[in-house]
Length: 491
Ligand SMILES: *[C@@H]1O[C@H](CO)[C@@H](O)[C@H](O)[C@H]1NC(C)=O
Ligand SMILES: *[C@@H]1O[C@H](CO)[C@@H](O)[C@H](O)[C@H]1NC(C)=O
Ligand SMILES: *[C@@H]1O[C@H](CO)[C@@H](O)[C@H](O)[C@H]1NC(C)=O
Ligand SMILES: *[C@@H]1O[C@H](CO)[C@@H](O)[C@H](O)[C@H]1NC(C)=O
Image 1 (cartoon, rainbow, N blue to C red):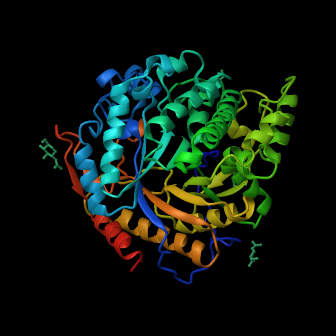
Image 2: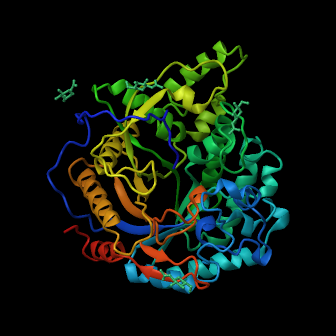
């Protein structure tokens, strides 16, 4: 959830005319098979940061060593205390009536050091309890294996820039399938690689704070994709026959509009964002988007390098990665207008400079508490249709979509955003034949919003972070979502 453009301090006052998202005939219901859920992530809700043998993650260490990097100086040592509040969390899920719950497993609870030598049965027990209670309440578990919280011990050996990372990840995935795969049928390997690779290993602005700009972010993505493919093939080879589940990967992406109808720049922007992760897996090429391969190679050459900063997939990898997923997970929050930015200079290269996206917003777009989040529901429609064309109508799960504010209970902004986005989802399915099978709202409850701490709230439930019980209170949006789920209709 980063700002992925050259920031511009002015706003152009032109109205949007574009190829996508212009239909306004209302569509307001969902197929009977369509599933509704809510999402969370381990680090943002669990707390219990060193309980029962859990090892530290890069976010534990990062927030402890750099408390000033979190805007309100907080950390996630206790967070929503979900480590101790499974029953209360289940109660909320039941009350909402969700079909599924997307949560993540903390690698550091399962393997505190990141490898099999440190296997921790208490971690396995915690997730067994959670999964059993979900199943007992007919709530399908959807598990994210990796949601930013890398074991710190693995960071000591380079983290996601280490070429052995995929091997460690496969070993972790193996433990998850063998312990939970009898009940978990929907697996997500990675959440938002571009969002942890660019700030984590490129700009150095988020844990693990590695500033290897222009190189580290590409290595991180490369190893994330290979690790994903290894986990996918392991499942198909050793588990699928018995367990019959699905494996996907999640990327966030904005949609882009051009004020001059320049489809070239819109495509470039989408390829540098969603395509960076998804093109190797879902396109016929089995490789990074052509525009990335070409431009990063040419920039690297101008910089006097012997090889491209974008790593190459060899022939074996291409065949191995192509098609290695059952569904595409999409986190959609917002959109931008885009035009081509300046040519990269040869000093301090970065993903951002390679991408050359000069972004701006429309003054009529309503802004959330989060500075980058503008309400652009038509962008979700545009993105779903782009995915349909680009990736041969692959099965899509909207794994996140949401709105931030100060935590107020009368959260009309979230209510409006939820309904407007769902309207475009319904339309994408019914009018445009997009293969979207599920929608998951971010988030079940207010939680630790990374470097924004508790200052920005995305929950359907308010969480009182100053009460020892971390009391949860339903917001207006939870009632609205509950009704939508029950009726499968927007009013
Ligand atoms: C990252 O490194 C570059 C080049 O050394 C430097 O210009 C930049 O300020 C550094 N960024 C951070 C966040 O430390
Ligand atoms: C953009 O394309 C639309 C639809 O094709 C057209 O109506 C509009 O006039 C075009 N706008 C510009 C600025 O070219
Ligand atoms: C981005 O576009 C605006 C509007 O055309 C322009 O004024 C500005 O200089 C551009 N910024 C960069 C960094 O190219
Ligand atoms: C949060 O909890 C604290 C401590 O229990 C209490 O004093 C405060 O009134 C609560 N705030 C809200 C908004 O409920």
